[in-house]
Image (tube, rainbow, N blue to C red):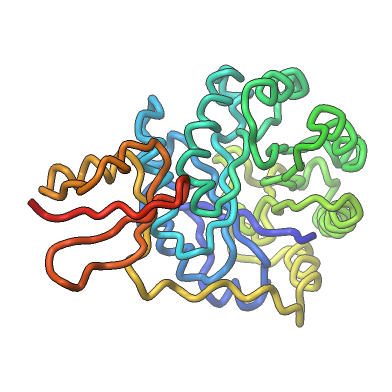
Amino acid sequence: MSLGLCVSPEATPGADVIAELNPPRLRSILRTDWHLDRLVDLGRQLTITINTEYDRVGSDWAGLEQACEEIANRGQGLVVRCPIGNEGDIWGQSAKMMADLVERARSVLQPAGILVGTTSVASEAWVAYLRRMLASCYPDFADFHPYGWAREGLSAKLLSAQAVCGDVPIYCSEVGVHLHDAGGEEEQADLLRRAASVLEAWGVEGDWFAWHDAVGAPGERGEFAFGLMAEDGRKRPAWYAYRDLYTGVEHPTPPPPSTSDSFVIGDGLRSKLRELGWTPQSNEHVTDAPLVWAQTDDGVDGVIFWDKANGTAVPYRRA
C-alpha cells in the first residue's frame, strides 16, 4: 500500500518536486484538459476525481461520459482510478444521483481499465450517505475522507468505513491534518508518518492532503494550513517526513505513452464520427458498450473499432 500526494490545477508541482518527494501517485481534480496533460507529463500514476469543476462535465453532469472518454484517451495508461464527485454529501448532492453517476462513468472507464469509485464522503452524516449510495451502484471502491482522524484515530475511522463498505475496497483520496488540529508543524509530520503506517497495516491506499498550502481552500492558510510546503515556499517538517517515506524507493514503472491512435469511443465520439461522415459498415455498432480503436485500415479510407463487450470488429468508412 502507498500514500500518494494531493495536487490541484492551481498548484501542480514541477518535475523537481516530484523528483525530491518521489510520490507513488498524484491525486487531483480537473478543470481543463490542459491540466490533465500537465499531470501526465509528470509520469506518475494518477487518481483523477471527476466533478463539475471539469469543464467537459458541466454543472448538470451532462458531459460526464464525454469527460470520461477524454480522461481515458489522454491519460496514456497513467490514470488508474476515478472517484465520481468530491464530497457530494457536504455539497448536498443526493446519494441516489451520485450512485447513478458512478454507473454512467463505469460504462466508459471500466473497459479502459480504470477503476471507478463513489464520490468521496466527509460530512457528519457520511455513514448513512455512503450506505445509500452503495445500495444503488457497484463501484470498484468507496472514497472516504477521514477528517477528524487526528483526534479520533485513523484506525477508528477506517473501522467505521469498513462496517459500511463490506467487500467494497476503501480508498482515501484525501488524508491530511491542518496545523491547528495537529498541534504544530512537528506534530503534523508525526501524524503523516502515523497515517502512512496505519494505511499500510489496513491495506488501504490513500493520498496525503496536500503537497502545498495552495491546494487547500482560501480559508486553509495559517494555523489551518495543510501543506507540506507553506504558502511562502518554506518546507515544513512534514515535507521531509513524506520524502523519507520514499527515498530510494522505485515505484512500479508506468506504461510508456502509446505510439498508436488508441482511444476509447463512447456515445459522444461515436456521434462525432457520424457528423464527420464516418459510417459503420455493420449493425454491430448499436451496442451501448464503449468501443476501442484496434487498428487502422491502411488500405484507404477505413478504420476498425474493436468492441470489447462482444468481441467483434466494427469497420467504419468515410462516406
